[in-house]
Image 1 (spheres, rainbow, N blue to C red):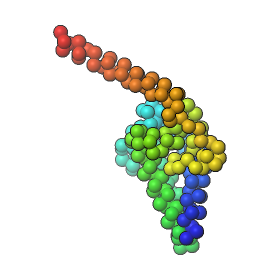
Image 2: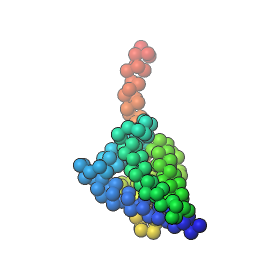
Image 3: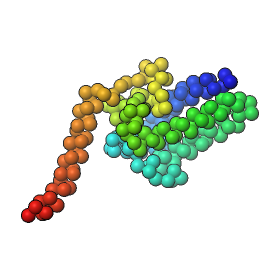
Image 4: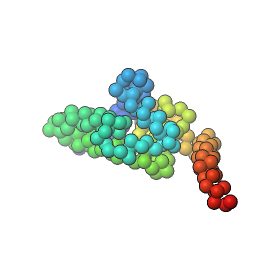
Length: 185
């Protein structure tokens, strides 16, 4: 049974490490397999206020979501193979992988939910510094490593939200302008 807390700790540590050093370290290099994370996923999330449209598409496509699923499946294989030796750790680790994908996907389909339930991940994508807040499913490892930088609820976030709403409103007014003008004439 000691495998359960050990798996929870190692999963959070690995999530933090992989996000920081693999997905952002190697991922910032355009030719890297991991470039999908920073260049596709982060780009889409920043442009669309946390939404990544790849999560609306089939997970079996060669896009950011498909590559993420492939990486998670390859991570799950050796963990599953260890199940006969360390069953509690293996099962808990596999549950953590599934939970990671489920929460990460939901966060990028429902930004309001992410802001409320995963503010550290919301802060990672929408805050001014994307090189912090590495945890996705929890913030505790970021707190331990002193890489947790809050953004949600800050004056900066409010200014950014107003700017995005104004841009969106200006776009909608421009799009509706000719129709409104012609229907009123």
